[in-house]
Image 1 (spheres, helix red, strand yellow):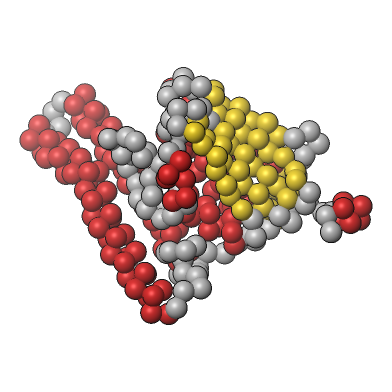
Image 2 (cartoon, rainbow, N blue to C red):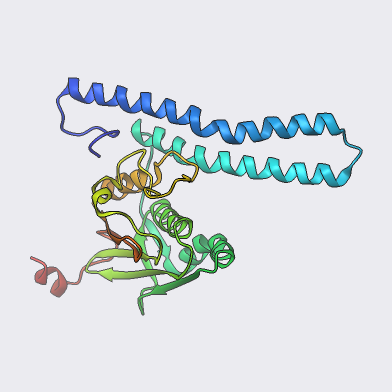
Amino acid sequence: MRTAFGGSRQPLAAAEERVRVKAHLLTLVGHELATPLQTIRLTFELLEREGVTAPDKVASRVGFFLRAAEQLRGMLEPLLEYIQLDAGRTEYGRAPVDLAAECDAVLAPFRDLATARSLGLDLRIEADLVSTSLDRKLLRLALGDLVSNAIKYSTSGRIEVTVRRDGDALQLVVADEGRGIPEAALPRVFEPFERLDFASSRRAPGFGLGLALLHEAVTRHGGSITVASQVGVGSTFTVRVPGCFPLTDELARSRR
């Protein structure tokens, strides 16, 4: 990655960039964590003031706690992944993966979210594509992050997830009919701390690290991730990871 994860820059420039990125990260952490922490603090104050004599009120306050805790978890998980990846502590390894079972497991918690927003969520796996050799963590990261974003930034239409084979590579495509991304913003989509809600006055909580993490993880597998998008029409993200299927002699010769 060109910024947070280093690269081919001169040592001094790379060091300065890392200082800038970490300073920006600390600012974001303070700002983004303030809202859920404030919710928790105020809820405690209300409970202290009201006591525990009204069970119905206590139950409603517990709901506030749970939502604030979930918001914190959703922000901190990618932040911790970012820190581990930046420090070179994230390990990947390939193993046989049952594609249908794994994809269904990842999508299961998103189906209710999609239904609640009147969105369709379809999964299409290429015929005869049963298993592959892939890092399970990478598949879950790619599918979970892309579908989560598609739901978050769509208010109608369908989200289509397509899994297919491209030579020895696995290709994962997530297409939505959401708000889309401005053309000028597309080159920055996979940069750390960038948000997809460019045109929105109300930003979703988070540090803008999800797509940056996914880009780095896919790159470390020798793969690629691309995006095509049009404002008001939707976005299509395509992940391609090579080396997931054995190449027959004939197919190998055709690719030389």
